[in-house]
Length: 273
Figure 1 (cartoon, rainbow, N blue to C red):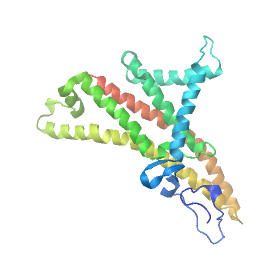
Figure 2: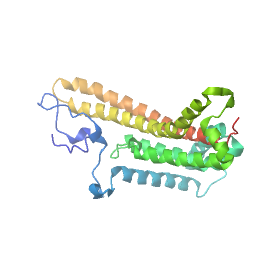
Figure 3: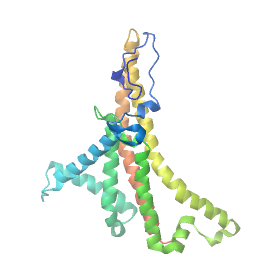
Figure 4: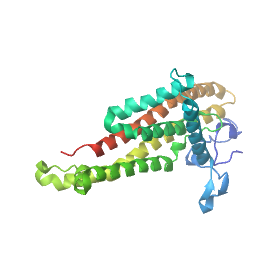
């Protein structure tokens, strides 16, 4: 097999069924990329996922700049699309979760998170790129970490130390003897489990989706030999189906991430009872 084991894609191997070689199944090696610049051993390098993250950021900034640099009362097509996306996040997520009065100041943050995550997810189905940046855990972890810092600091700022502790621990004196245990569970849930699941939910969905796409894509190529061609056709149909499904999941995961972000912020702003 001639493929570089760190870059397994369907077109990078000459291996086919009945040729005496095994199926080049995707795995963790499919998520590793050689540095485009620098030395991986020194941890100072620049690889494909970093490039895609940078390009994605430039695409988003460029899109909104082009749409709003000369806004018109009667918007053109580009401005209309940008306004629709912005308004969807502002009204459908922020206002619905936090409220208009409190939520307005958080609209730029949430809109930025939504479109950045969506773009990072979309790289999975874009030719040449063909990889979702959020399938690398460090990216969702950093985004979840930013939200975590904002949420915790906002809670302390709004309620003070005692109020924040009650907010995080779910303090309720009516619980009686089980109050200490309930508070411990709530503290662990809010301060450790919640940010962890916030990151892993996005990562796991993108990781699994990309693995399935790789599986059916490689299988389509691998089966192109003899009677296997019939099965290759079925596998290719699955590639199309999975790509369409991934389009839905990519947008959904960006929506879920920002929805949870707004839920955290709303909880930080809410009065503890």
